[in-house]
Length: 142
Image 1 (cartoon, one colour):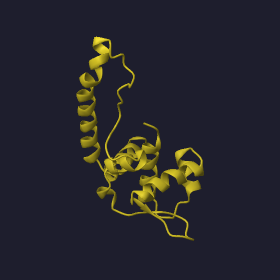
Image 2: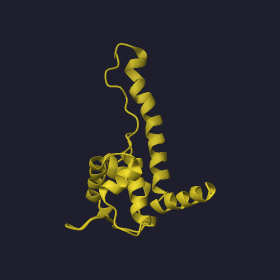
Image 3: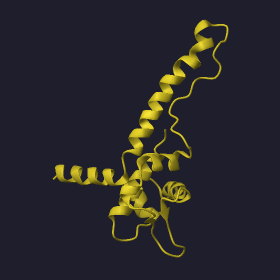
Image 4: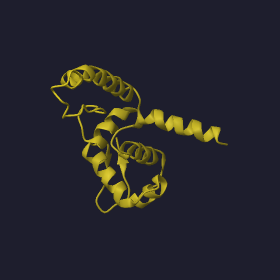
C-alpha cells in the first residue's frame, strides 16, 4: 500500500480541525510533500464524496462529520478499490511442483481472513478517533 491513505487522513484531519480555509499548498507544507500530490489525493477524496470545494474559493470542506467518516471509507477512496486487498498470490507457480500446484488455494484463505479483519478494524475507526488521538499525542508532547 502506498502513502495516499495516511496522507488522506492527515488532510482530512487538518481540514476538520482548522477554522480557516486551507489551500493545497498549506496542506502540502504540513504533509511534507508538494501541492500537486495533495491535489491528486484531494481529487480521490472528492470522487468518494468525502470532501467538497467551491469553484473560485480557496479551501475544502468535509461532506460529513468526522465521526461519520470511517477509516475504511478513506482506504477505499485512496486505494480506489471496493475491497481490502493487501496480498496477492504469485501468478506463475510451477504446476508440476506439488507446492506450486496448490500454494494459491493454500494461502488464499489466510490472506482473505487477514484482509477481512483489517476491513472490520478500519470500519470500526473513524476520522474522529484519529483526531482524538492527535489531541492526546499533542497533550503528551507538552
